[in-house]
Image (cartoon, rainbow, N blue to C red; front, side, top):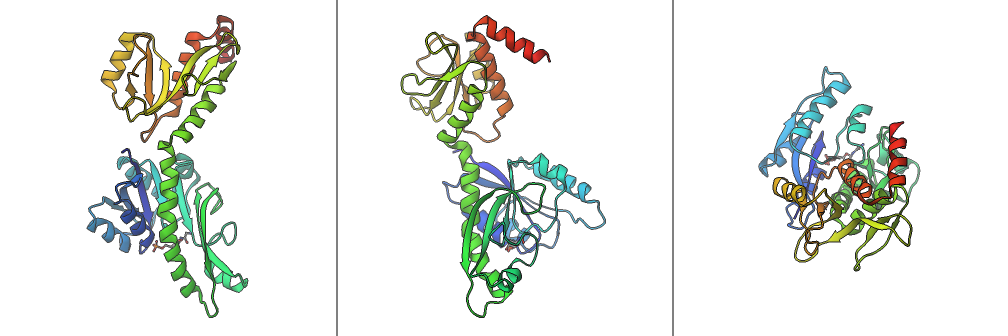
Length: 320
Ligand code: GAR
């Protein structure tokens, strides 16, 4: 099973990091922890990670410009081969450049029911407002603080006599359940056939004069009219004993197909029952899929069968 690699960033005790780490020990967890990194060399969580044989990295932010410190962390995270960053009590405001570099690939947990109480002192503010629930939210990180799309939330009932400390303690129990589940769902979607099919379909239908048409029960995409259109892509889900989920596109011929399959077997496969037709499988249920590359293949395959007047139009459009 392919696992997404996550880097967890902490500043303190790291109990959420520990929850994520121990959840990853289950065989069916779709992620593994590639690195635990901190801006605080004394963060308690680093020891927990080390005890479990996880790579750690610490670099104090003291005396550094924000962007420079972010760059040091970024290098360590990329060197560890991480696909995602998971912030778990990482008490740093991040520079826009760092956030943009991980767009859609950085998650955070925040101890409130967002959009309520962004920033600090969330439990105190919930109590002062007379709320009946506190809670926690997991969201995607965008440049605006605690503002990205919410991926999951859990409510925690406020009881008489609660203080910010007692509420914080119960919210943490809730966080420890919520975070591994939401991270799993989010990173796991990239291995999910429905999610992959939707993504391929969006890219295929973005090409001129295309339409979807199933073929032998599998999704497919054609160029041209409904009547005379030709297939330029098929979607393939774990067919004939293969564990690959991916898109079939047309190569220039069997020589190219054989070479690609031999040189990059992690990406390409030769689909069964397509004979010497030149259709090649592009595996998508793996981490780090380069969607630009998939787009280029779809376009090339489209060009191979599209009517000449359409490809000419495309050439003119690309000339601008
Ligand atoms: C967690 O409650 C988390 O929601 C919060 O810090 C705590 C870290 O605890 N994060 C924020 O306040 C971010 N703005 P932990 O180190 O024990 O996981």
